[in-house]
Image 1 (cartoon, rainbow, N blue to C red):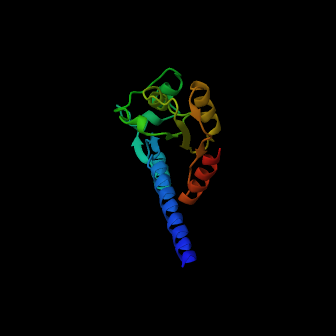
Image 2 (image 1 turned 90 degrees about the horizontal axis):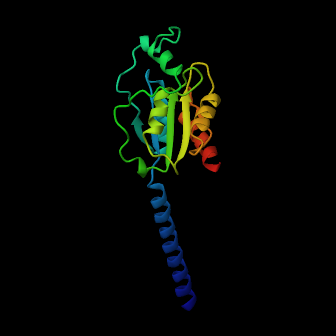
Image 3 (image 1 turned 90 degrees about the vertical axis):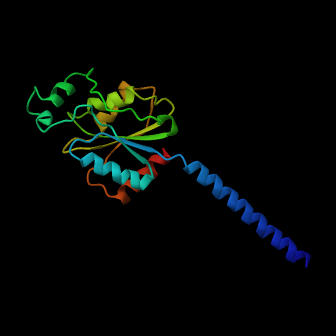
Length: 188
């Protein structure tokens, strides 16, 4: 009889400890990441949506005050808006609205299309208008031909006091590929 009661108490104790651990894990995972992104053509937006589904993160579109037109994106025209902005390292296109509760996020994914082998200048606007110290920043990008390495290197150089993780080009990457990348990134 005593053995039965002892075993019962051990089982109840283990169940209680397991339940407490599960609640602790849920509490830690309540802090969802922010998936902030800039997209003109929708390509980066689609990548951001996949990333948000995989991570459970909240989407935030970095939206310019003045929308970009097709003519603005003509990289063959040195007078196009994107060419002028990218040729001026101090250019900071205005964004419509800053993310109000940025303090609620510990991890922020920052997504962008690669322009001239760099992040568009509006990404600098986002970084400079939000308090990101102490946050983990993970860049992701889409591109028609460039890799992400140079753009991430430029961001790290421009903002060396921020906690940057390695970025990833998410062109045509499915959710399983994103999941695999996130698993590797979280171990770094």
